[in-house]
Length: 417
Image (cartoon, rainbow, N blue to C red; front, side, top):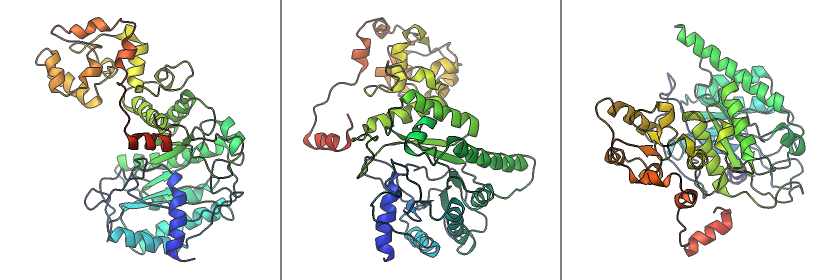
């Protein structure tokens, strides 16, 4: 099989990995001869569902000795198989990078022989890129479940980011669909990476120059919709990982039905809007001070698909409002729908010099239609009278739109509302 044919198979197999963030680094490696993690010369491309795929995102191989039921590369799948050599991945990366097609490499793999052997192959790619070709671009390696800690530490020397997939939201989900993977082992691997990152940061803070170790941190991916687990459980797992393992990102990937799937898996993908709502809720946890428990307000413990989580929380907690934009704390201002972190910072700075009026908020380009019912300003805000109306939720929902022919086709294909 030639490289082009392998690429068609292994790039397609990698599309299920949703780790799309390109880089957290602000400078390239010292002594690099090619590649940059900064913005110049970086190309971006997008998958049909809108995900950024600006990396060369491939698998080393889609052979796998595991039999995770949600994975198209599981051992019992009849999908076409392929495997790159280390030299082929290195060559592809360099050629794509030189042509400015990608800004870096995202490399994952099915498990061949055993976890340690597969991890050694991934490390060989990274090491050859860094040491033989002087490659200084972005490099994201997926670590292999159950790989030795020493190998993960070796990978962190060459990669900008490491990630360990948590796979499914709960231990029960893993037991049901991927019994060979254990949550304690997965979290243990994350903990090992976190400790090495902490050590490097502490030595740096003390004035030493420690070897680089995954400077862009670690991330994980969670498949959503393969099991009936609710959004609140998904967010709790994410919150535990952010707090305990200090992950940079948790990526949520809507389950994609696969051929000849197990009967326990759903026949249809969840609507992509659910994945979008989870990302919004994730943002609220990381930057707005929300807890996983309070974000979900629907009785079925799932996020509303009709309105964003922040507005849903505001409608369910009207006793918290109105918030006086001239006196409220930063934490209270962050709870107002339509006002983001940047505008909260601006409001706090401006109100030292003047009392804020409705017009001031509009000039700051807050989403006034969402915020107007919930804020107390220095002038009269007639919209406040709507706060206690029973039909406020209905009024605040986005207006129905006439579907166009191609919109309907897109919805039918993706399941998105």
